[in-house]
Image (tube, rainbow, N blue to C red):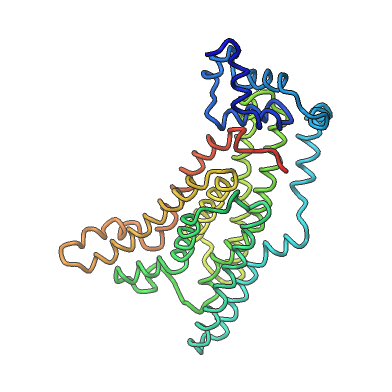
Length: 367
């Protein structure tokens, strides 16, 4: 350790220190590089924020940066700016976020109208599904749902699997187990009710974008108003919990509305699977947005692995000597596979997000 260890730290992080507009931005950057309060003690400071304040005071910066910091009003940032910014989405973006859901609904109605002509119905579905996928891709690659550097390829793969299983997986498991369609897994490929859950999930992209935008703006406001990393963590944790509860309520409202319009079941058991899947996808996307795509992909992969095992167990039900492997699936029931698989994965990701997103480095200054 040199006679002036702080000076050595400034040289190692020269760009971060020179471009920061406030001490908390330096604290967040140091935290992202592994700095903790115990490590800050080696620099003769009680915590990272105290060290960041000294670094900020010692590094010369341009007048514009200093003036921006002096003119900063934490009260206005924490109250006025988030409230107005969080509710303001352009008409173009609102229409873009609603496009996948509208396309799903139109496809379901078109396929249902052609139910007497299966080949034409399948042709319509074959054309519509890639278009819907492109619409979803355009939504998540811009605006509040955009992840830095794009989402991990694995996350997109697992998302496709989870959505496909939500539509076809449970009926397939029921068929492999020898359950007829009337044994708790009603499914008709040309009925609008079969597309109720995917349509509601596609429509949920709009509230997901709004909730993500609201969370990002308010967390940055707390970041600007906080005087320490601990203050920021204490402020942002209830904000994250509130954001997740808000999205869940909006998702349930969409699921109930679409189910009522299509005649699909609205029982708690019928809504649990799509709701758990929606929460898993939203939590994973929130982590990816804030710089944790690996954790997001891992959560999606874990839920997918459970569903793959369910399909494999149902298939092995027909192999002599391996029938007991299908016992747990028989006990749970084909119609109740998505809820525990996605629900547990969503809860684990939410616990990880509570810790990961309480770090100031997960909320960089908006450009």
